[in-house]
Length: 190
Picture 1 (cartoon, rainbow, N blue to C red):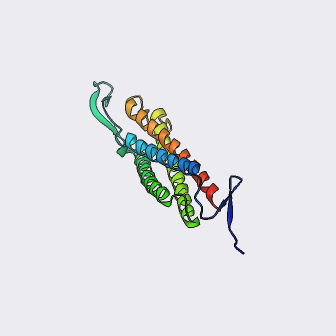
Picture 2 (tube, helix red, strand yellow):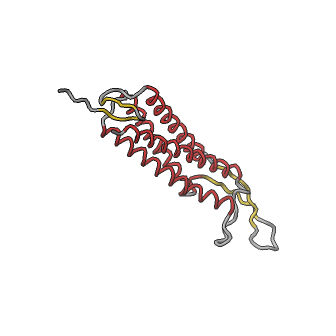
Picture 3 (tube, one colour):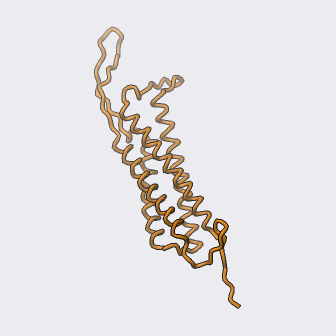
């Protein structure tokens, strides 16, 4: 007597060893390409963010202000460096996972599915944490902090702050895409 093992996926039975549906694989591939593009763009936008301004600094109230050229760069803030690094790591992982998805042609073992699921979960955690870190520093730059006497810097470095905000928003969208990939991966598990 021949016994075939079947898995339930979205209410439909699928025999083990058979390929997953083309639309599901296409959706996964599309989402992975979207995640690749989003993480690459977020890392690039923040990585090239730089603005130089001449800022008047008043040392003594009776003297005229001293004009000092000041530059704002993402590499000056560790939270922004972390965000760039997290996006670069997620981008590299996504490129590898796209290759795995394309090579597997829908036939994936449980261990490969688990490896991709765990990788996607790690990217969710990494991207959400970097979004939080960069977002917190961005808010500090936009609003300042009266308790520690940090001044608002986005009034001076508006272009830099806007680029940082766009990068953080794109990273957040990439995090959500990875979260959806985790759900999609979890639905494939037997």
